[in-house]
Image (cartoon, rainbow, N blue to C red):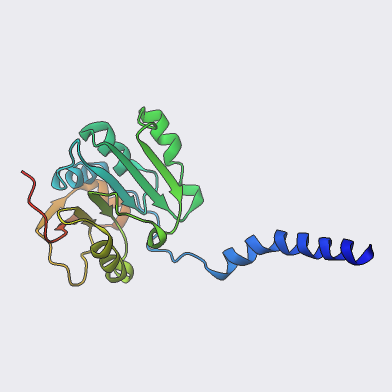
Length: 195
């Protein structure tokens, strides 16, 4: 009887500790600090990506959700999704409710490298150069031909952009001390051009 109780106690203790041990063993890598994309750049990104009704928009490192929420509210894609590893930044679901688009978007606390993006036809990113090579390989492997990827400020190391747009915006001055922004449009090879 004592052995069974001791075994149950050990099993319960192990079960209670296991989730914490799993999380501690594999922390998600921070791809960038939270820096909100200026609103003037949000519209530029979505226009450059040519977001439309057939699209599904994914933002990797979505922060407050502004890119996906604006895409769904203004350009009417069939839906959108965003991920961020910082649980404090996944306020985006509340922002989606406020914007009236919560039925078509969702946001989750998740490592962007563990996120399946195969459903996306448009992906947006504003991440640091240190992760762009790894992300490039992931996106090229998972996205369908013709899918568009828009990178803010930092390009992929080997993927040649289809178009680069440079903008000056005073909104960015408080973020980085500069007004200049570069936005890179990539298209997964092998697909027909939209148009």
